[in-house]
Image 1: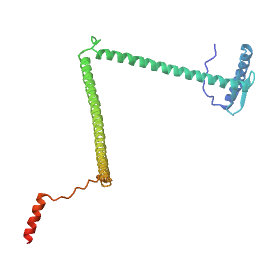
Image 2: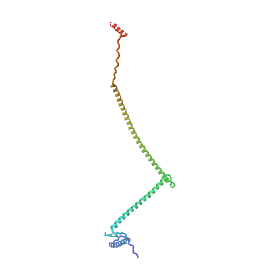
Image 3: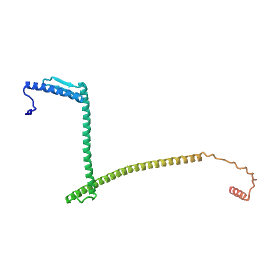
Image 4: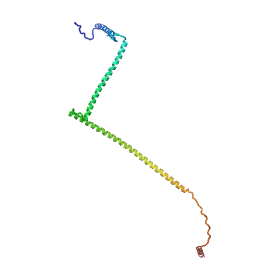
Length: 232
């Protein structure tokens, strides 16, 4: 008869548990040694008993084995991380590809293509989507036009203010020009009047006339006779 199957569970009896531990410990240490020798493997075995006692076996150095274990574990973790990351991105790529296909199909259907496989409900839904899309386009268009009109109004008011400022500058320049012309006119006439007042008077002496001999004429003689008769 073969040996019966042993149920693997904790042995309640402390003595039996210690005897089983000693037997199996020696067996596993022997197997580890044989594995290291036969297969040229680097083996490190650490066992802690229930009482906390350490039992170990190593084919070279426990420190080297532990360092190598940590290094390989870190590399494996990195590989696992890379593999999991690659798997994640593969899933993302598959989802994006499916979304792209769906969007391309929807776009073709919105353009009126590939409608043969659609029923009345699908067509009604597409019509509702188109109406909503057109409504959104109109709202966006109106908003853009309102913004442009507001911007043009702002520019117009700004240009109007600049125009007023320019008119004011022109009026100021005209006033300054009129004042300058007035000053120039006044200064010119003042100089002209002063020149007339201080203009030198040139006197010319006439040539001496020859003295005429005084001879009484007939009229003077008559006048004298009249005067004499009145006095007498």
